[in-house]
Image (tube, rainbow, N blue to C red; front, side, top):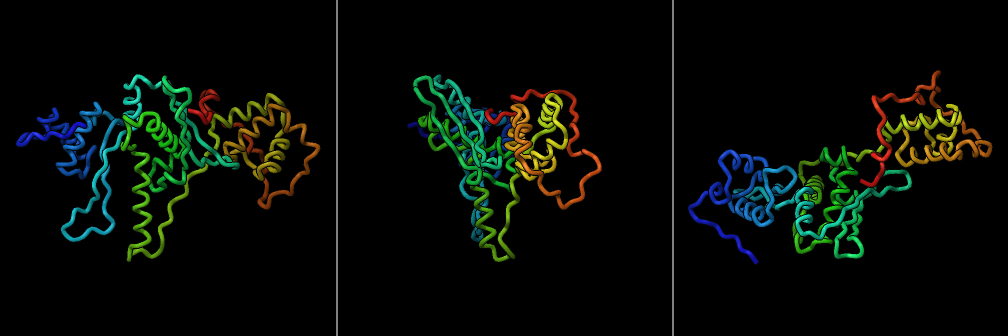
Length: 309
């Protein structure tokens, strides 16, 4: 096993081939709060893995603060070297055995994302390395990336885990930024419970429910016009099946079901069997603005919005 060889009295810039400006960027951005020893370990790992810390998404360093540091004690926990998703893919490709990657999201009955899955294929394996991960286990709702893109983030976690399963000799003990987010989240949760200054337990913001985009709603109204459905037929189906009055309130799974019902004729065939529900408590609009077609500049291919990416 290779050991770290530190050249005494030689600066890190010279030892690892970085100029002064590059080192300043790495210290302040890529390896913030790292000690000199941690920097040496980081650069050594970069050289062994042939990953560039100046290339976004390949490799970087994370360090979390301690909850209750003692006086004159280092306020940070030991740091962790983290490989980005591009670094994982690059390393897997370099093995010459990677033949493909598939990934997607898992949803509950209401269409909410509850996790991610990934398959990693090797040329010398008959079956892929398959992994499913829970959104609840990994999501950090305090971070904008998890609030704004929960599905993309959880798929990255699943992909990295599957890559580690497929290539343990390459990725053993190496983690991605998305996987490490749960460590920061747990630190905040524990701190909110034990802090003497905390009035009550901190409640994380809720992760958003995925809704149809404007382009997807445009597709829905194109189907409506093509099959000559009336606004009343569409609204009756939404009220009966989903207890919704507006297409903008639909989840993605409800949106898919509505589109399928219109295309197959199920919406019209089931009309006679359904009873009209009671009118909603809120005063109905004088217009059908909640069912109006949403305008967008150009059509977007439907395949773009499939769960599998």
